[in-house]
Length: 193
Image (cartoon, rainbow, N blue to C red; front, top):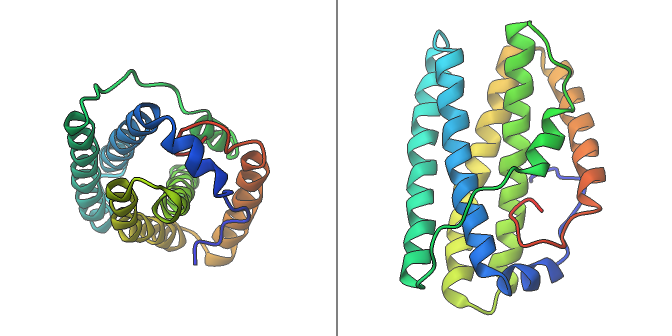
């Protein structure tokens, strides 16, 4: 369903579970960044009413997810750590050349958001199936539908703003680019690391 061209090995779940503070801090900040990205799309493409409405809903939902992660951390006597730059996101952003063409830029941003959501969904699936901590396994399993919904929404909007064949070619190329990067990942307790 996700169309990703690489899978996360289940051994990553052990790394993540052995470093819960880092995993949950990274996850919390990833939710904040997803909300900020949705708000940025609203600000920069305010004339796109349907997209603005959808991004408003996503921003709220992502902040709700942040709160859920933070509440879990507090219940486990953890403190939200410091944010770190996402090497994964930086890598994806380099895929599309900078452009002043608003439509081209929008489609690129939507495709990057879609792949980030797809990878989050895939990683949450790995955690839900392989964590010994059943509370967290259930928590990550419960997030799957939301992440998958965001992925399809972003991809759908990209296809609305540019010819589908062009978008699908960009999407396929981005999937290959991301899969190549992910070959070297799975060794750190980060959602996309």
